Amino acid sequence: MDASRHDRALAALLGLAVGDALGMPTQELSRARAEQLLGAGPVLLEGPADNPVCPGLAAGSVTDDTAQALLLARLLVDGHGRVDPHDLADRLLGWETAMAARGSLDLLGPSTKAALLAVRGGADPATTGRAGTTNGAAMRVAPVGVATPPEPLAALVDAVVAAGQVTHDTGTAHAGAAAVAAVVAAGVDGAAFDAALPLAVRAAREAGLRGARPDDQDVAGRIEAALALVRSGARGGRPAADGGSALLDAVATRVGTTLATHESVPAAFAVAALAAGDPWRAAWFGARLGGDADTVAAMAGACVAACTGTAALPPDVVAQVVAVNGLDLGPLVEGLLALRAAR
Ligand SMILES: [Mg+2]
Image (cartoon, rainbow, N blue to C red):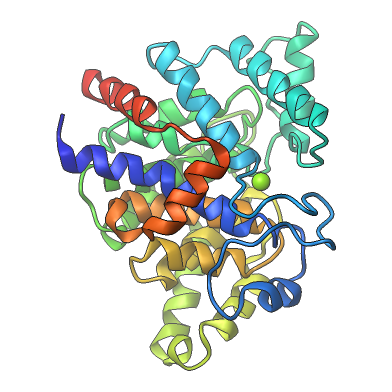
């Protein structure tokens, strides 16, 4: 197996987990409160007492983003590249039951929960995702980018749509997921983050035509606008002067950080671009946004790390996140890359 490809694939999943853990404490908080907690520098914090979903959660803990991505990865490997919708519904609902039993308040998102309960109730899985426009498909899609080459793009988009359909079968959700998957797929093949961006925008545009509803939010256009926003600010020299704070204010207010796909996915691309190829910094910028900070940081971390490899992630942080969550990513990465080689 190609060592550099394996390393970048592993980095995609580690970047996701590390970003998720860094953003865990600031999720659902305001931009100001997130900046107060993390503005001085990136550090894995315990869930603060004023966090509505993760008070007291151990530092380094990942959330639903990593859990669902790894669950999808396992499903892809077990299904030889095919995502069985009933299996996905069973495993996600089983995961939520286990989390709830442990007292977690961070459970399935709104689109995902409604769709999975419908599938369990006997609904056709081809119909259950028709209302899903939130970022659940994009937050869990990184393994699809590991398991699928970036070209032909139509095949990558097919794989993204298949992985998202049960819960998020809309142009908006598919577009966001396709953009993330395209960067991961290109990164695993050796692309730098900036070089992967045109493919991500094309993927979003193509995937936005899929699903039950058109992408009326123009996710591809919003990604381009978010990238233009940080590039114009970065040229003014502000990130060096204030740690990126003014640009993050602009991302929070002008791009948005809710769990809507058309806000959080462009926000992830903005912070990833702002980080100039450093996945830990990308995650840090995402975590400081507040709002859906864990998901933005997870998506940004996965995208940038897929393009750098594991050497760009701080080893002590990776070790802590792996230990706290009992992650064993090696076998999953090998399984996903075997699927990629067979496509
Ligand atoms: Mg989360």
